[in-house]
Length: 469
Ligand code: BG6
Image 1 (cartoon, protein in one colour):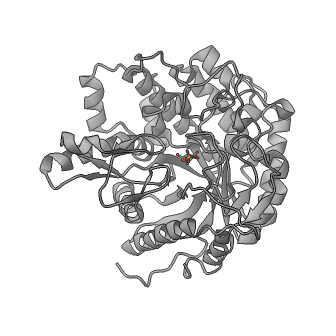
Image 2: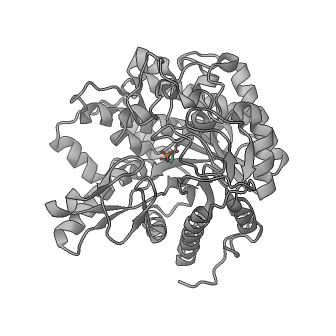
């Protein structure tokens, strides 16, 4: 490893967001209700179909109306890319229509045109943690095979409309989330104590096939498209050098890698085939599914990285737990944690980048990373978020080292370049942005945008292509 290695020319610096966490306008211009619209406690929590409680996602940060002003700020920072998701419900309000809602397509066309105007590469997530509520109610979510065709039609509609302007795509955000929060990722509802592997694995299979069909149809429409998977990386360390701890870490990692294995290599790995058989899980497949997976692997590996995990076989260690976005885990005595208990581990980003590249030899795209923290507006109007700068600097340094190790990383889009509603807790108290939004968790505030200290810091990082951190 040499420190001299620089970020490649054309490296895609930018930021990442998701439709339901910032757009608001939840009923505008023909949009249907999505799973986020009935999740007032966060899209990782059980939904409330009564819709009686205040739901911060309904207004988000009003990006639906402020996208021009917000994109101008991203452009001022020098963004080379902007990752956002499309709300499925703006295009197909119930998910099962044949004809798309033109108003929804027009909105995203305007967003894309605005980005292109500033030479910002749009990067689109086709489904980010939400889906039409009607697909949950009428089809039981991704448990139903029917969703494969609905999703394929949705993805085809997007590729057809936007392929000339948008090169980079991702099929499902954090596809492995189905294992941990089955409603969020797959619209699966379980009664208390009824959560089961059968439905989860069947849904995952449907998503794999849907993703592979999207890759197929996207490449047919335009062979230049780069269509990736997106996993929530969950690098696991053994708590100690005890062989059993190491084995436990390997096993825990497989719960994540299974998803990228199928999407990047094109087949179910033997460890998973054995698990499925041993646990009497019966994945119903249609003729041709395995060929579809094999023939339509992803072009790159997109992943989020916020924290690392620890596996232990000692009951004593298992007691000390810490929280995270998807699951709680064993506390790592070597790491500090964010105010929300997420363990901060920049070196882990280098390790996981090496792990994924060694395994797949496909380009990596780090599409989420960042620090959720409370920010304070000072009397003079400034927001001094040095904590965020420290976090990002340390992670970018490690990303640079990973590139020096030989890993092909094509871009870095930090999470929430503008403050937005959190996914796990539906609040605005927890902020990720370079741009402060004057709105609180009750939806109160002027909605004014304020540049934080990190705004100019990141601007310089991009201007120097990562040389000045
Ligand atoms: C990722 C999700 O898991 O974590 C994002 O893809 C989410 O949607 C991000 O916002 C941070 O989590 P949170 O709960 O702090 O918003």
